[in-house]
Length: 285
Image 1 (tube, rainbow, N blue to C red):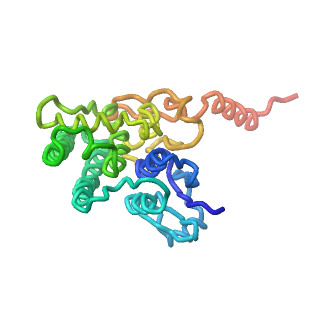
Image 2: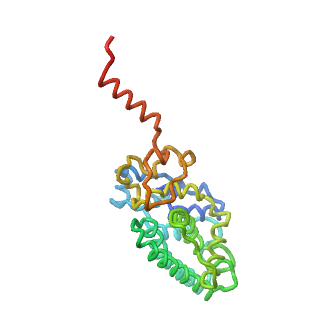
């Protein structure tokens, strides 16, 4: 029996939305996930299917049709898979959750631009921008469910969209020292944020994993691009992230090497160097 196939990047927040949906439905095996190594050129066969586009995730339906854009894929799977829908059935409530979801794009962009910023003098401006977007989310939640935890009475479509982004923003906590202030302007969104982070369906990633894999983003190199002076991306599959040391927090004053990050084995480097030296200067017999 054919399955839906999702081509995706490891720890991608947009792919995690789909994983959350499957977790909530108890249908973890209903979709086949195929990992794409973004540190290497795209597979020509995948490019053929996507008509040359490289953005991920991409869904290939059971019939072989290609569907792009994570929110489109999320809504599609929500409709076609068995089980109760994430989206609200009531048209007015669905409109409300859709308005909240529409705020995700600028919110996500602000966080990624913030972590990729390399100018220490611009740090405060990026921090203020993100805080203003958190206040906007707070206002929205106060308008539509001031005393609740989620947007409605339970974890739903809006939460599946935002929770992976909240998880990725661990990189802001680590590399920028970001935190939400105490006060009424943030109280409601902090409650929502905490509930999304703690929900059992959102545990596909953890903070250590995000911090290690997104180190190159903190140095301004996204999507598998190499940092100057480095030969291995922090998004490389090997060595596995669990075996690597934690990166330095100081993104503005420090740029760790491949060896510092545990991306290459110093012993192997020395062995290769010695081998090259032996080859260049063989010992006479």
